[in-house]
Length: 294
Ligand code: A3P
Image (cartoon, rainbow, N blue to C red; front, side):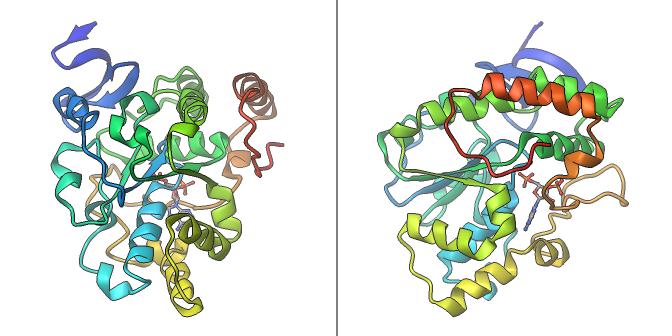
């Protein structure tokens, strides 16, 4: 079905729908085709840093890490602005990434083929955060149960099928990572996993600093780590993104923040089916994943 804003997938809520633009699923009234077209010709500066994530892979976490690194670990410098203001999504029209002061920090869920062409000329730096897709699907399932504008899944089983078919926001996890990884040589890019950040946040922050050419002494590094822990971000009024309209006060954006919650949701059969698809779809991606899939 072709609508004014692209191909409609299905109605989510009365004023929102999932539509497809150039093969990627977006939520209407938040993402506009007009803006998505503009993004592709955004001028990217050498000093820009863009973190790329598939949804539910640790985007807000990376927003917090990047903004703290760039204010030299001074928590006072970031307390007056939410992560989304400090490190906006480039694909959300009203966030004005372009007018932020240098060095501009940004995040995006966009697939490779929709990002600014300038970024592909090794202008700016890219950090791609990967998370075990089994934990991503669980997190996204709960997010859909939480966020008002997204439809509540009828069951985890149905939602898992939709995820595997790419009928979710930002389409297929497999396509996202595949496309980005295949084109990695066009970027100054660092791949990092949610799991390594979770297992050793300090070493991960150091790795990100090294990539960005930022030097923080031990004390500053410790402060960055302190303000980026799950507990701190969940309790911190500035990071807990309370402004998102949600379906129930008993749910939270900062849900569990752990590795392996998929084991509490997948049946053995679902896990084996997922592993089979993963092995097939990822066989030519030589990234080392550190998560435990069994
Ligand atoms: P869960 O739903 O598994 O708890 P995104 O920001 O891309 O939407 O990702 C959200 C996921 O990252 C949620 O996962 C959230 O709890 C988790 N998360 C956010 N901040 C975190 C942190 N500091 N440490 C660990 N996980 C974090």
